[in-house]
Image (cartoon, rainbow, N blue to C red; front, side, top):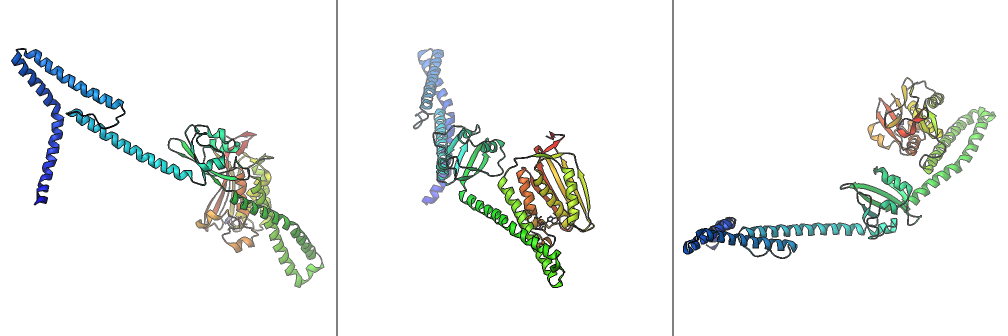
Length: 455
Ligand code: ADP
């Protein structure tokens, strides 16, 4: 029964609320009505109806101004505490403001708590985190940023980051605004610490910087590079001696002994392969250690270089192939040895993996942004899933074919490293059974015509 009654009451209570709010909305009209009625009543009693009406309206205006003053005082106190007591629509307005303020405060508190939480989790990271405002000044940094980058918090807040990290290469990286890749540098705090830096834009051109200590990985990588460089260097002399003796045996009487001849030939073939391997490993080591392009740079006549490569390749690969050359007279700023090594690897590959009646087209040209060296063949082609791994050391699509054609599996790795030195990259397009196109893409700043840069 009680439930039934309360159910019956529910819409009733709702209606009361509704009419109350309507009453509050019309309260001012009632006040005006009562003021006018009181004025009229007083006027009839006193015989001064007009004056009494004016007096009643004046009282009403005075009451309103008292409410406005209350509101002003409450606003000037920063809306602290509950709203002043009043009645009519003024009360509704006060309550609405109070409700809005409370929900605003709650929202702000929630966001502050979230920001505190994020900061607290960033603060304890082992990686340095630095937040940088759109003007390039530090907004916040964590504890690790002090250890890895020497940034103090809060002393360095509002300082330009570039005033505190003064490495010129870092400055170039920061100002380039191209943050696709990581940047590596020595820690300004400790020359034995290697850092990997990642910068990212967020919000309205604010930036966030992460710096990670990669000293261990760096040392391991350094050890690997040193080992490969030393081992290949040490192997070179014994191999030259072995090759020399084998050649002498073959040229002398021992070479005419049919029992030994086959063994000599095989030994010479294998030691020559090892020599090629050692040579390519050494080239890679040198490329890795020299880093970015520097030293003797000359404008290379690509057309003439390609003619030379064509001749060498035709001698090395005895099957006849049609090699077409379409080179512009743009010159490439660089080191001839590197460029010769990269371009000849590509042309030699095209010749090795193309049938005797195949066709190879070599192009050298530029557009507004880049210069391109392109080698296209209609040879055996490569299946799509191999393409991403082709420039890895010793990655081969068909190992036996590569070895039988004298390949070391290092050719494309060398091409990739040469291009990295020039700020370029290698693009590969290929279809199995139809042919391949290898494109060396150089920044246009490496291209010159009549000693003038193309762009
Ligand atoms: P390799 O010395 O074995 O040729 P590379 O690094 O030069 O080593 O090439 C890696 C692999 O890529 C090769 O083993 C070959 O399978 C494939 N490859 C390279 N160039 C071509 C090409 N023009 N056509 C087909 N396959 C190619």
